[in-house]
Image (tube, rainbow, N blue to C red):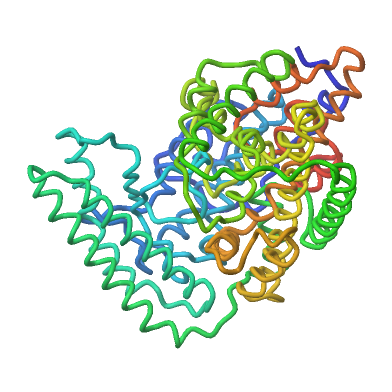
Length: 563
């Protein structure tokens, strides 16, 4: 049971409708209590609005193809005002904090669509937006980055395919040629890096389709024909985007002012671009400095042995899962659920002889380290098997606004486990955790400088590579540019690891102050996870009950009410 805090009580009394960015006319055919302009204090009106909003946010489908044409997008942008108006007509100020949090989640999602229409326009600028076939599972609640509706997640279907699964895949892939034909008309943007690196994503779709085709049987000739049409359409689209590449000369960053608006109103990050640069520079310097100290401490120890065979990979990775889960259980750090270990073990993967990318360099030296970051699979298990009581939090939030919570907690969990003693018997693993932090801070700085248009994507990749210890983030690999490509497409993602980590620490510190000797890590983690996969700033508010000044400023809350 959370100890009540005076700011929680004040929050419930003083918090009025924070409708920043939410204005417009009345909704047609919607809930009577809000459509007429009347004020509503009913939580049920918010959940009804949320259901309507999620249907509205999806593009309309025409002959099996999502419609991102200029006319359709202009119409959607105009109609968005109706949903903002309905939200502005709901007053959550008397609700429990948990329900007020839901209100701000809905507002953030609406602001995300608004920003897409005003600034990002991925259907106009980003060829990778039209990638809709995926061969591998994301470790996030929803796939990272902006994508068109109608994704075909091939990894979801067990092989050999059942007749029903084959039909479902066939239905999904039939829309690919039409979508890519439409994309040629929609893509009129001039953003050089977004365009050029999007071509690689499209080539990835072609490769996934080719691999999937090789897995089909002779009895699945109809599906094979559909796959081949989708692949041919993808390859033709690749050729078209390559033919247009030389004409793309514009910058791809959104600029500092737009970035700040997006942080505050969509990602719900209570920092500015300039704040983030300072934070990332500090974390980068700290990681390098403490790495040097760890290396001095461990200088008489042998180097960590690198996994060098499939048999060794299986043995060491499975042992890492076993030992990690045993440590969690024996130290009462986390409430263990039945889905945790199986999900973590299922993502061990297969041995690769190389060349190694950054995370493989870490993983093959001590598999335990990345198992801690594998908290993502605990999160996915929780979402699937312990769905939230709130319909607003039951599925993945839009626009990746879960990332400060999911990426942030996974990053913080590495350091928490180091602090809790998991690596005391393997001290050189502590070096790996500091190297991971340096890489995340370095790539975040590259991300920030891309969005301010101080760096091109190649310059951001080079900066991240040079500032990651031991030359493990090589410019010869695909990872470093792939990460920066994601961050350029999805503002706020590159900084989410470190900022989310700091938000966890803020929340934990506040609960320690509130509870004193009654504080425990396990109880804290129970509270933290119970809030769901929502922006870390909102988790902090819900868990602590403290409506602090940074949260008030972010949500435009004044002592006299919302602005």
